[in-house]
Image 1 (cartoon, one colour):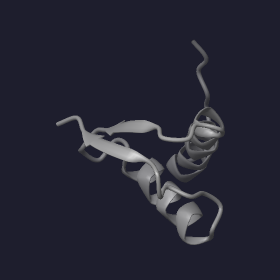
Image 2 (tube, rainbow, N blue to C red):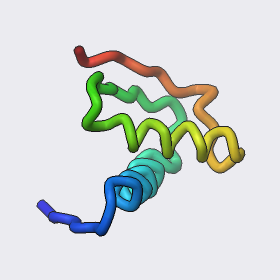
Image 3 (cartoon, rainbow, N blue to C red):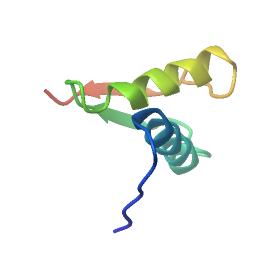
Image 4 (cartoon, rainbow, N blue to C red):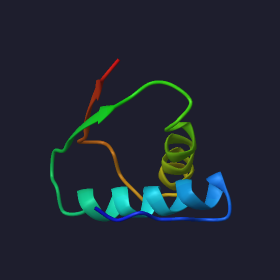
Length: 67
């Protein structure tokens, strides 16, 4: 396990989004299980921003709500 420390929640969310995108790169039909609540909201916002900027294509992704 690695522990990452950043100066702000926004920085940590951006880092998490980068790791997320790296993890799923090359996967043709990933299944993404998302949790509700405020803890992951910065990550989700960052992913939406990147999707809207054309940095990622989620057309063939499947999403499952954890909670």
